[in-house]
Image (cartoon, rainbow, N blue to C red; front, side, top):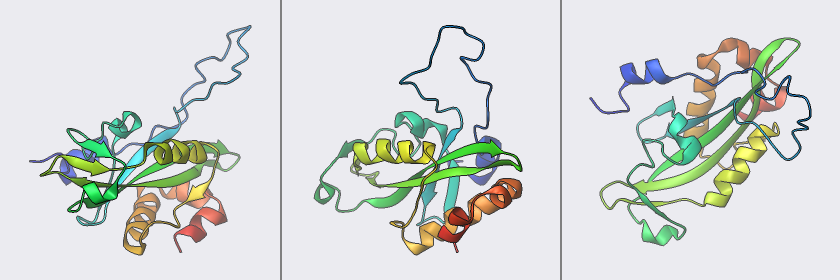
Length: 173
């Protein structure tokens, strides 16, 4: 059984949602210059296998897709790369309840046999930031990958989807 098996994924497919504020009640801490990743979860979209799953290891570039791979910034060095998307999903809460606040996708390619991959780390970090700020950035995704992602978000939690903005829903229409 490999790590992408459906049964195993069902156990680990959970978003990190609305934890208590870790600095709440600490007088004298202004929180200036800090941010929290507690409400963010990374998804992996594999368009070749028609799969989407939550992989918290991606928060530290240690997702199943990224493990044991040397990443380069020249796409030509990975001619047989398999495309993936890491999608940074931020969940927030408003009057109606929890919703998908930010969704931003980052591209990478991996050639498992050659143990090489292509990704631009700065793009991944910037997309994480955009997701935290409530931006929806999925236009650069191919149609098939975007469709897989949209279906996953709808099916994962209908309440989150229904409470989300029209902009988010329109991005997957």
